[in-house]
Amino acid sequence: MTVAPARASADKAGAVLPPHVRTAFGVKDLEPRPVVWAGRRAWHCGDVLIRPVSDNAVAAWSAGVLDGLEVPGLRLARPVRSSDGRWIVAGWAAGRFVPGALEPRYDAVVEAGMRLHAATAHVERPRVLDDRDDLLTRSAAAAFGERRLALEPAKGGDLYGQLAAYRTPVRLPAQVVHPELFGAVLFDDEGVPALVDLVPCWRPKEWAAAVVVVDALAWGGADEGLIQRWSHLDEWPQMLLRAVLHRLALHAQHPEGSALTLAGLERAAGLVSAGL
Image 1 (spheres, rainbow, N blue to C red):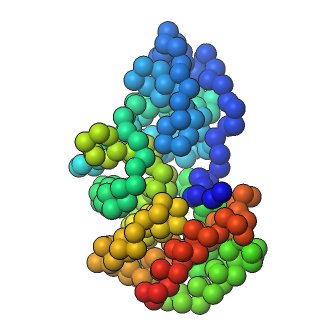
Image 2: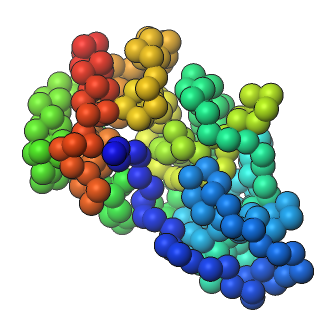
C-alpha cells in the first residue's frame, strides 16, 4: 500500500450524475458512461466529461483560466459552460475530453509543467487562496517555514524535523503554479502531453517542478538521475528540500498515512538530502 499525492479533498464518493446537470451542460440526450480519468471519477458524454468537484470556487477559477490559456506543446482539457453561462452546476464541472493516459514520462511531465508555468506567470494571485486551510495549503506553508505543524513522528514527522534543519532562505518569485502535476498530465499515443485541470498554488515554479521529481521518486519508481537532469533550475537543492518537506507534512497529516506507507518518501528524502 502507498499513499500517493493527495488532492485537497476527495470528490463526492459514490456520486451519481443528476439528469439536470446533463441538461445544463447540453448532453441530456447522451447516455453517460462512468469512467476513471486521470485517477478521478467522471462521466463521459460524447466529447464532454462531467465530474464532481470538491471546491466550487477553485473549480470555477480553474475553468476561467483554462478557458483562455494557451500553452505551446500542451493540450488542455477546455472547460464547458452550462446553458446559462456557469462553469459549475450544483457541484459539477464539465470539460472537453482529451485522450491520453498517465505514463511514467517524468521528465516530460516536468517539461510540461515548465511550459504551463511560463504561460501562467502573468496570472494574478487568485483570491480563492485567501485564508485557505486545506491539507495541501498547510503542508506547503510548513515546507516554506511559514507555519509550524504538529506532525505525527511515525508518519513522517521525525524525518520532517530532521530535514527542516537544512532549510536556508531562498529568493525566488512566487506565481500561479500547479502543485499536483504528477497525476494531472496525460500522454496520447504520440507522446503529446495534456493537462486535465489547474490546481492553484502561489509558489515558485521551480518548487512545482521539484514536487513532480519528488513524487516520481517516491511513488513512480523514477531513476535517481531525474534529480540531476533538472539541476539547472534556480535554487534546485532548496526547492527539492521544500518539495520533500511538503510531501512529508502532507503524508503525516493524511488519514491514510502510516509508518508502512512512508517508504517511498524515505527514498526520495534520502536522495534529496544527499545533494544538500
